[in-house]
Length: 92
Image 1 (cartoon, one colour):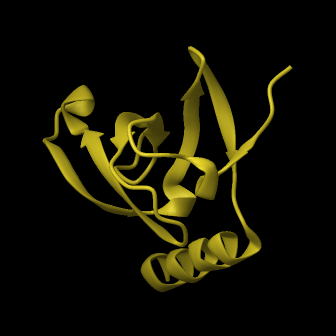
Image 2 (image 1 turned 90 degrees about the vertical axis):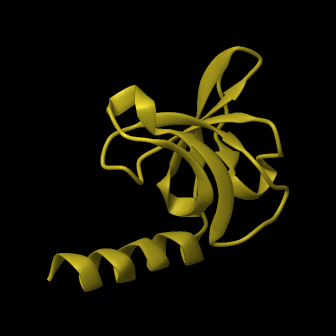
């Protein structure tokens, strides 16, 4: 039975899937921090873009690989509120 993992529980070196490029791409967590932004090595070449390391919003992390299985990510209320604020700013 799968269990959602909180973004603050994702540790450096764990594989993730994120949506900050507009589609889900894999990446590797590059920090052990907590909060609204995390440092990720993003594999943009999966969708014809560049691989790069940079900060992304925590709400853009959608899946994390645990013991070979992709598990969903649970976001905090603060992260979901930030996502709504960002969407309102850029989509209006």
